[in-house]
Length: 122
Image: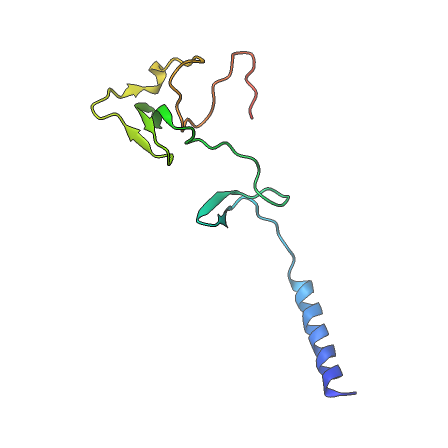
């Protein structure tokens, strides 16, 4: 036997022993980030490759409410997705908001409005 073959057998025994001690445990509950040039995609990983489809909440630009602790602040979303509150505007309670197709949207609402009778979770 050569020294190389002995080293190969020892390495095979060590690797085989390590394989018996460890097993892969999937953890897709952690958040992950993927770099795309200067931008990141952040989310929880699905079991298959890639991130699931998602909705961009701070686009398009225009009039919007921002939801904060049960209150709504009116303002604008700019070209870069930044919310700019209207200075001096009245802050309203979320419970006073009345949704309809022409209402000012709440861009960061932690949910959605559905017609009664169509209350299925996404």
